[in-house]
Length: 214
Image: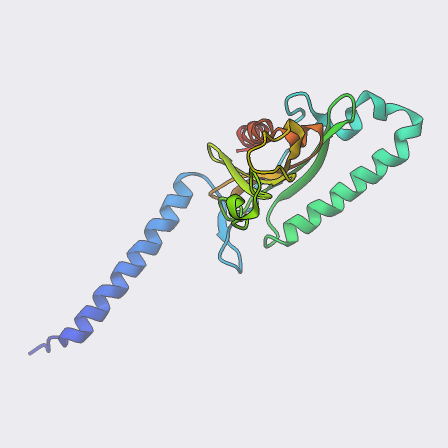
């Protein structure tokens, strides 16, 4: 007569069946959305699909396309920026398990505002980490380090010191970076120049790049 498995064995088999079914479901789900997602060594979702950076982000165009940069005098600087972007792209890829990555510099027509745009096919923490500070204890109107969120975009802000009770000046807000992440894609923008005082504008540009790439 056949021997029935012990109750402990039956429970173990049942658990393994659930685990296998769960993994199969995850694989099918990934394939269903058409993403070539992989897990990196750190457990981060990555994707090898190539990335094409947008031709324009609002009033910002790639650094080399700004009219002021088309003169012979600007040639060396343009070459340097392009070379650094290529090397930065390689570093960004390596830091996320070899995933597809692009770093590109954009600027407005005056060159007074610039953007470093980083796009990589890997997930990243959200929202961005910003240390907590109590402005009341510091005697300031706003914390020196601040997190602001606009929809699905989080921004790391550095505020100039403004005494408690006084209205902060518009240019006292300095955006360090704004980022959006989801699945196997992250878009981050680090602004410089006048645009860094407008975190909401930077966040909107992150969304614009996201819609172009995703």
